[in-house]
Length: 355
Image 1 (cartoon, rainbow, N blue to C red):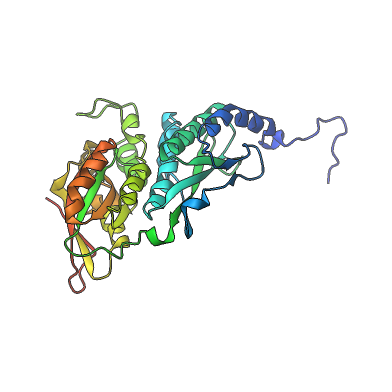
Image 2 (image 1 turned 135 degrees about the vertical axis):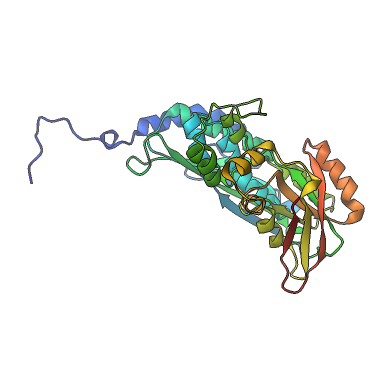
């Protein structure tokens, strides 16, 4: 082994690709964004080894904590290619808080994990601003997180995201879907577009096979492809909590990967099925673009994408109009998209009537 030259410069962690001082600067840059999400129950400040939160136990006799973790998928690749980093953080929050709210739980706290090839303060600051915006929208606290620099692990200039949410619900109010019966109505809440699922197919069809540029403006669109693809996932947790507190919902299904056929069965009793009328709403134009350019079948589209419905609520027929009004009053489009039927022997859990 050749000994080190005593006159040579000592090797540092920064020489290996990790800049601790840059990490400290980044924390200072987004400190106020994080604080802007704090609920009154937060104990302490950011910068500790963990986050403390004391939820109001007087509101719950038997509180259940509900947990969810998710990422933003390969949508982050599109964000990196476009150089737009302030929306995928909203996607990250939405993916977990919507899942927590689907159980009837109020999202309380959120944590993020950002792993990046080389720490670029401006990029990380934009990501965290998006995460903070999502947390404010969801009414939960960004109570902690981690920014990890992994040189040699990721492609140069790339990053990935993970998020973690905790919510609380009274045990007797936990939504399981067990009270759903034939005759109930399925309400669909409109999505903003693709949300954060199916982007591997999106990238293959639009960016790889068709070689469209992200600054391309497809026919019929008044904005660029990047702006369309990077529309952030809607955060429904506020309206979901309001509906649940009024006792109006028997079950929520978050329409993520797998679409309506893959997610609605997760809340249906075994002796029921869902029948969806695809003509009940108009899917965003981006889905038709993907289907036509990629020659993707309608069945494949429905089993991959949300097709314009980001969240569903199963309700009694007598409550349908009130639920629609309440959702629309919160700024979301909503539609009666189907109903619950008795399940046929060996029948599918969800039938989407595609026309």
